[in-house]
Image (tube, rainbow, N blue to C red; front, side):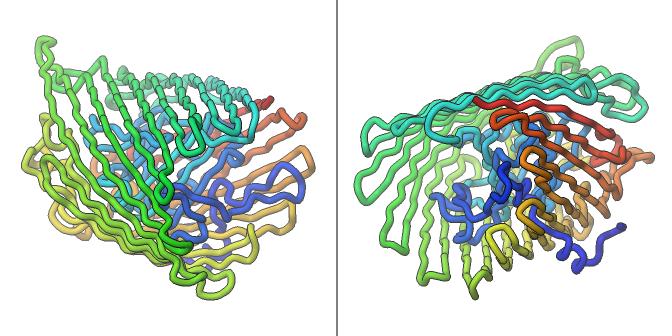
Length: 617
């Protein structure tokens, strides 16, 4: 199918691929339900059916093979797309509704993991896999009123700490597959009535494939990820906790079409300590977070940056008071410091050091109010005092209205801003007198539920950004871009269970993203996913998906022979339960061996197969 201009077909074929939103449970007749609590759509957890924000969720049951790249999981959700400079571990940009990763706030277990040393403050999902992930929430649309500067397009909240059940649980996962890929993961979680302890450790190594056409060497990747945490009730009203992460990796890359010798290292460390306590009417949480990142390009040529080092320190407070059965007020304070150091290689081997830093004080509040049983409202405001850009106020108004039984109308209005990154201001390409970007967004959606598992929904979205910052090749520095950046479109999704064993799902997104009238690069105008989940018997479950992407504009600097354009990916998987605690899985990606590119001049995986073993005890 070319261009996918028929919305009618897309609606009939769609079904939200919230990985899989309708994943059939392992026992016949039991189907995963969507009506759940989401923790990221507001300052306090709310029922998914009662939030005006558009939230997509992924849980551990949807990740049959933990070695699957996180980008693969997220790319199949409505409104999300990505581009990558190669395979696993390569530099990648995730987009929400056509806006790149600089506008996407990212948290892992409550720790802000965006990289403050990059040209944009963003998280690179290139080396993240599904190992240890217990849930992912994607909150789409402007969330700056809740999460600050980087949340203009939305938030991705990744958790590895969700308790499975009281008692002790350990899971071991092994994967082997194409390109000499080997991965292993160990997860242990313990929970009692008064506390919990968990850790997740994984390691992956792959020979990979050459990232650039014309080079014949392979660009490998090796990475180790660790997340851990504990929580303990000290009394009926006081709880303390600690969560942390350590991620280290080495990735090969082709510096150019004629120089395949590059590699990078990346070490990230994060800690968050917190306490929750109840003073009666008000519940409180106080937290302290640390995040450090060190990246290196050891073979960087002269006048390039060899070493990148950054630190983030933050203190936060959140209070929540239930004013009545229909009204909750949440309020909080935050203080964050960020700094970075760059080492640029000069002629003769000398290094030139560049430093920069800033801090932000924030106050925020959200009022959740249900004036009637069928209407839920959220009003959020945030005040930011940036050390370099002064005061800024962001707001969000969201509503979820059950206009009729099983019909829900959602609407959101939001404003936001993005402060220039440290790199955009202080690097050798930076400009210290840049202004902050400002944004406005709106969305309206309608959902029809036929049962716990069957639904159709559609969402219209619109975002505009003023004073956007981008690299200016005419001046060799970062500058404000003339004109308004806009991204608008529609998301359609749905799901239909044919029986208690077979479910159809899919989604379609139309995105029209432009800056000053020119199409945004690497953003698909049409993105369709359709698929089926089937429980063949009590032991065997399968999934089959087709994704079609159409009408993509390549980068202006893509080579003439680039392969950015329409493509169709066919993926399949099967899981076989050896017993109640052990399962084998087979995952085949790009079944038809489609030759395509998401970033001009960079290869993507061909047909790939992976065999996995998962055991829990």
